[in-house]
Length: 93
Image (tube, rainbow, N blue to C red):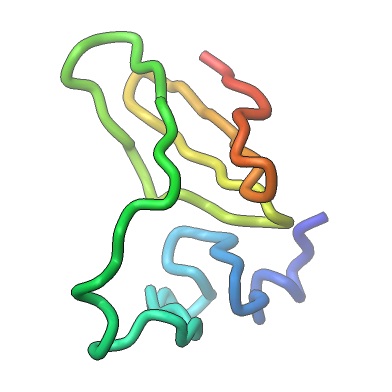
């Protein structure tokens, strides 16, 4: 459960609200990506959002909580993915 305490101080790998924390800092404390290795990054996983119309896109900052990724898109579609299994959990339109 996402509590006020978790929102105030999110775990390093979580992004529980739009700006990540109440200060809206939009900064991740993760340190795996650096100026020395950013050029070598490659996609490890892609997922399909199944947009209802061509040209539609993500509408807000994706959220990450408890190993799940939540994405809201145009036309009021929300999709949840399990980051451990890399599978779609559900889609609400």
